[in-house]
Image 1 (cartoon, rainbow, N blue to C red):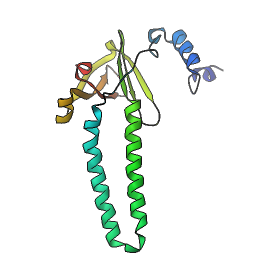
Image 2: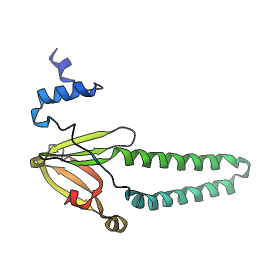
Image 3: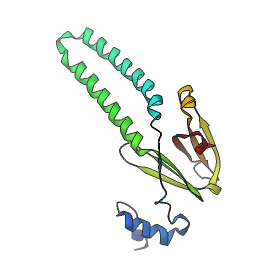
Image 4: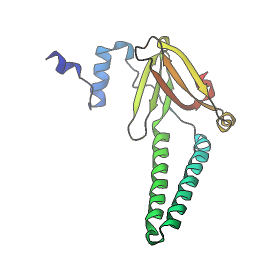
Length: 169
């Protein structure tokens, strides 16, 4: 019976999850209501060069396949279009899913593409944060990083998505 009650959060309604968190983990009470700061629209300036490089590579592979097998002219074109559409859908999903929230007592990091995973960490549990920027991100005043948890048994590191520079500092 005890084991049945320990698995308490899979696919529950949000109100039930909030109630369980407030009763079982009072230090995390209110964390779900933290306002999420979505990625800046300038993230597309960082994403697009990478997308274009990927599409250029895919186009050259498509052209090679087309040259080698003339009888299958439509298949490489359909594959290239499907790959490009899928890449665009994934980037859009990632844009709407990733976020960083800075609360009074904790930070929340959300990540994912087609599902959302949120991490809530109290500031006292953070060992250190690393940040990085490429030249385009630096110009847009955004940075990404990684959050390393203090005394984590698994040496756990969480990726911080692109956010304003001051959020990482």
